[in-house]
Length: 154
Image 1 (cartoon, rainbow, N blue to C red):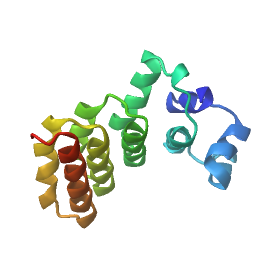
Image 2: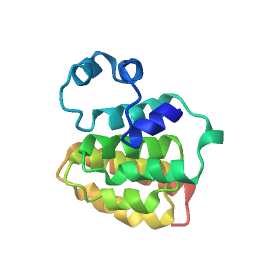
Image 3: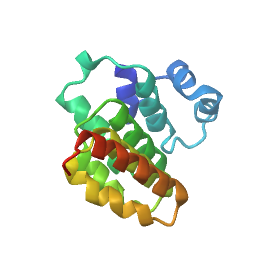
């Protein structure tokens, strides 16, 4: 986990770890291709599969939540998935992503709010029922159903 967090922080964790979390796609980076955002994405994705809450302190939580403001849309998307899976206290950051220019990010954010959001998130989620993208609308409906089941008086 610490090495995945280190990738999120922009550190180099070596070729072996990159190959482990990134598969053969990491070979290009190892061979000198531009790094771009791939190691950060792979670090976040690894944390969907490996988790030890005892090592997630305040700085680590802040680092995880910072993925939601990453310039790379794939990292924002994965950050939203991670926020939902690990129940991070990131509802306000996720709500901001409901207006993201990338439909996959909006979809991941609305689904994450369905998983961890509060009654306050119902109206912003409802607004995405009119999104031009069908997957965003589908995610919004599923999230509304989840939010309403957890917050029936809203």
